[in-house]
Length: 114
Picture (cartoon, rainbow, N blue to C red):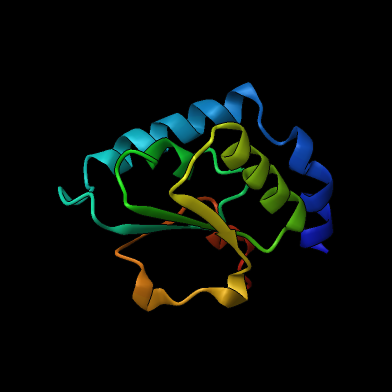
C-alpha cells in the first residue's frame, strides 16, 4: 500500500519544505564524509534523490534505490536532465552492501514495520 501512495506522490513530492529539509540533512552529512572521493554512496530509500544528488561531486559513484517505481523514475529523470555520469538507479533487491562505502538513509525507517 505505501508503495502505491509514493508512486502517486512522486511527481509532486519535491516541494519547498522537503527541499529545505534535504538541504539541512545534506549539510549535516557533508560534515562526516570521507575525504577520499574514490568511494561509492548508496542513497537507500532515496525518494526523488533530493539528498543524494547533492553529492555527485563527492563520490566516484552514486547508487539510488527506492521501492517506489515512481520515485525511481523521478530520480532517473533528474540524473538524465543533469547529465550526471556517476549516478545510477537500482531496485532495492539489486543492492550489494559490500559495494558501498557510505549509505544514506533519511526518512526511511518510519516506513519499516517494527
